[in-house]
Image (cartoon, rainbow, N blue to C red; front, side):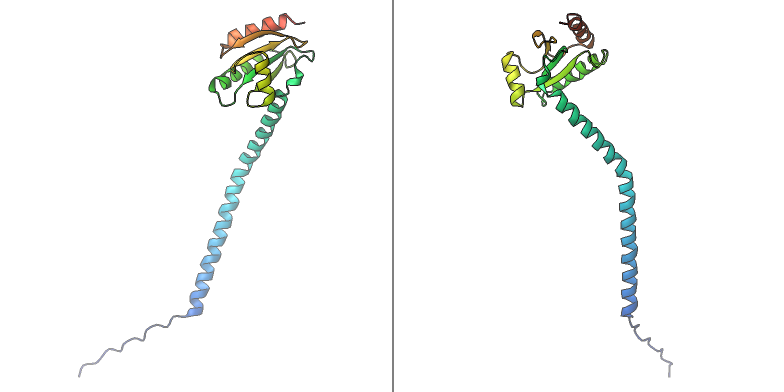
Length: 168
């Protein structure tokens, strides 16, 4: 008679061991998740702080530039009639700011009359000008010149020099 092999008994699953292994994997995954989150937060924090700082600066600048009551307060004023959704207006604004960098900070007051606001629309209507326009006011608040459309940097600088020379 042939010798029969003994059949091995099916292994019993140790339920407690399996649960312990699952818990250990979950703990390791949780730790990895936490470390990944900490790393990403550490990377993102300087960028978020920088964006916040520049956002606040931009908001403060636009609040000051939008105060049209500064016209006629003793400084020659340049007011841009501006539509924030217009690419030509944004181009004119960039050119104007570049041209103004050549002058002292207190030589001119630069303001932006947003036509999306009641005050900006009223100013544009008062002087019968469309957006993409610069209005140059003397120190007393009298409008002395209108510059329409995007203009070359050299032309804007010469216009501003002439305006500064004609100071009242």
